[in-house]
Image 1 (tube, rainbow, N blue to C red):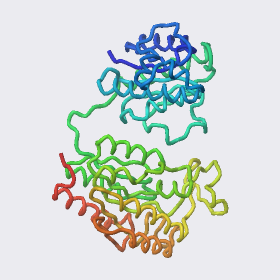
Image 2 (cartoon, rainbow, N blue to C red):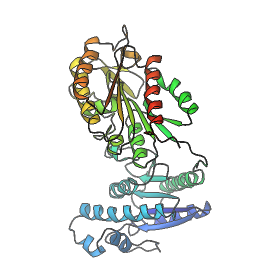
Image 3 (spheres, rainbow, N blue to C red):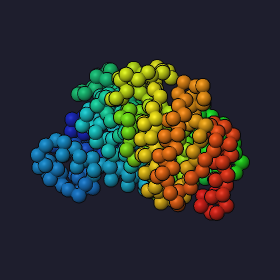
Image 4 (cartoon, one colour):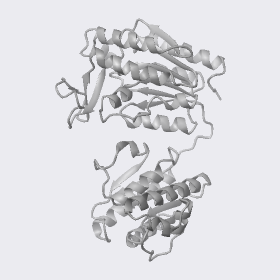
Length: 409
């Protein structure tokens, strides 16, 4: 029987949590309750009390209460709940976790979920799900979220529907978790869609021939975050980071980014990385929202009704080169950079809408001035989507495998 952890403030939401417990039992799973209340006492039995949570935070519940304000108390409870949940996960005492709450419970749950492994089932039932109050960077890449409509206080037919569906989602998730009995070493590749970056079509079968599994991450914010989460977990043998638009988007204050640390994690953890400037022809924005500051007068081209983009000017590509070069020079592991003088994507070919020879040259001169040994610097005359690029990338990869720099087992 699968064990599912339910996290909530049982003092104020005992009816809802008890309803969830029954739903999970009815689906042939075992519910385990963690109370993250601070002030009140639960009216139902729990498996992990607020006192146990406080102990894992290195405090007593009384000390948490005496912090004097609800935000500090929530942060302390979140610390204890996070450590306890991770321990339960690591000891295989739980198979998945579901949390519910308003803004306080949501804030706590996001802290608890932050260190859980990618692929470990996690579900958030929140009154602010999908709200701009939630910082995208705090959302795990594999989280299930559901709006808790009509459920701030008390049971009713509307919130019962949300609660039961969320329980069904987490039960279904823990029941269908995939485990590979014969895992291959994984190479992480970043890319945009094949209308812009097509190297993945060649790279995937070539890496498979070499006994590796390729995992492609879509660089629209969550993709880069997911990849770097897996790098932290030690699940990635090498990185082909060929789409860096999330890095420049962060600098230009676009919301389509993967945070300040993007392009630093592989280097910090000595994971071999081959890097190229795919996608650094544009800045991204939400089609349905305002453009980033400083780009208000720029012409944007909608990719679809979700994302739109505008071409970067020479000085902007130069700034992107500065950021990328400085990040790569901090790398502790094998690092190579490939400069495609023929353009950074299919929009950046001569005659296409984003092509700018001065911008390509400005990027090149800047990054060439920054990258020094031990970072390898390679150049091709062609575009990043041309065969010469993938041939060179694979040549570097094969060389590192032969030198024992990339784990192939």
